[in-house]
Image (cartoon, rainbow, N blue to C red; front, side, top):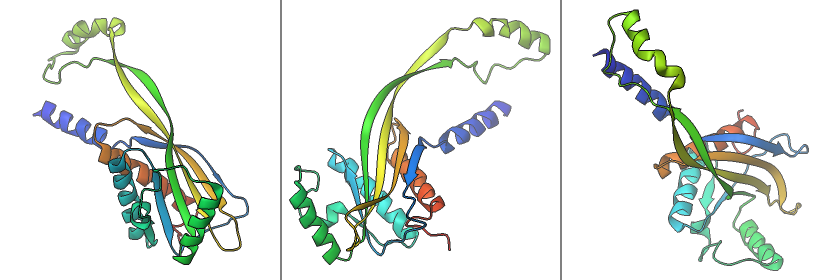
Length: 212
C-alpha cells in the first residue's frame, strides 16, 4: 500500500512540472503598461496543425483574461507564413489590420533546437522494501558506483514579440521574451505550458493582461 501511495505522489509531481521556462525578456522603457483593444495572434510554424493548435490555445486563454484576440489563420484568407512578404506587402497588411480594429500583434516563433542528454540514475523498484537499516544499507552500498542511464531530448528555443500597430507608431516593439520548451510527447501539454508561461509573464509586466 505504501509503495502505491508513493508512486501516486511522484506521478502527480511529475505531471505538474512545466515543460517551459522564461529565459529572458525585454520591455520597452517607454511603456509602463499596455492594453490592446484587439490583438492578432500569429504562430510562425511550417506545421499547420501545430500553428492552429498554438494560436487556438493562446487566443482562448487571452479571451479568458478579457483580451480580444483573433487567430491569424482566421484573419488571412491564405496562410500568413506561406510566402515571404516584402516591406510594402507588410505595410498593406498593417493597414488592413488597422482598418479591422487591431492595435497589437503577438508574434511567436521557434528560433532554435538543441539536442540534450541527461544522466538518470536507475531507481530501485518501489516494491523492494527492507525491514531494517542494516539490510537497506547493505543492499545500497553500490549506489555511489551505480552506472548512469542516459536520456536524450530536444530543447526548443522560442521567442514571442508584442508589437503595437497604433496609427501614430510604426510597428513598435513593446515586449520580447525568450522561452525554452522541453520536448514532450504530449504536444498539447507543451503548448499549454508555453502559453501559461507567456501569459504569466505578460501579466507581471502589465501588458495585455492588466492587474487593475
